[in-house]
Amino acid sequence: MQANILREELLAKTGSTEFLPTFGAILNELLSIVNDSNASVEELLDIVKRDFAITAKIIRVANSAYYSRGSVITDLKRAMMRIGFDGTANIIVCMGFLKEILNQWKLSRLDVEALWVHSLAVGNAVKVLNRGAVVHPGKAFTVSILHDIGKSILYTYGERYRMLIEKARQERADICDLEKESFGIDHQEIGYLLSVNWEMPEEISRVMKSHHTRGEADSPLHFVYVADAFLDDRAVDLGEEGSLLEREKAWIMNETNRMSELIGKA
Image (cartoon, rainbow, N blue to C red):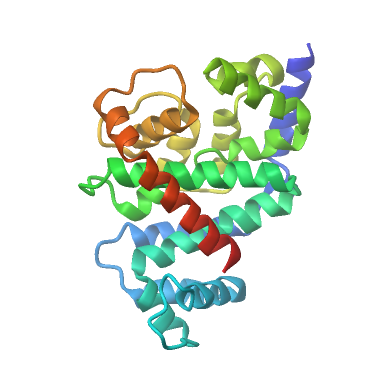
């Protein structure tokens, strides 16, 4: 009975304006650009310059130790050219996830960090799986960062949800099964409903809805499934792709730490 009550409560939350970030419109515009092989830096610039916070972040990142070449940049377009097209797009997605979506929901610092680091790690693991660029790199990174957004609302239940996360970790279980038992709904369904309300592209909605299920080979859904299962250490056979990620695990975590430091603190 309690699970049914919580399910109804969570369904109501997915449609609430409390969980409706303004970032959704920017993300949809961004995706249309990064998935266009003919898109230019100028088109991306038109999106970035509308948001002062994103503009300031990109300029700070361009002047960070990782990107700096000795000269200080104050011009947005030059900063974007230094970082690169995909790098700039990644920053926009990460800022939306970290600042607008997570922080505005007033999650604890540790819960935000857990979601943020895991999502970045999945994004970097997907980069390894997608080194042949079968999927557009910008699209692959975006769906990776956003795949677990449904967990954000579950984290508003505090310790009740943290205990499920810990139980799944200890038992190498699928967190979705535990979520359904406790809340009557899992983070995949919550994420899917949020993505529909935010009018996100269908491909992102599909990954949010089904990323604990194998997708077709070389699809965004498949890559996110493998990366997510590997990093959660779920008791599933990931075959050669799992072995590849194991060999590249040090790079994945180092890159995750670098990006977290760069984007989170620049």
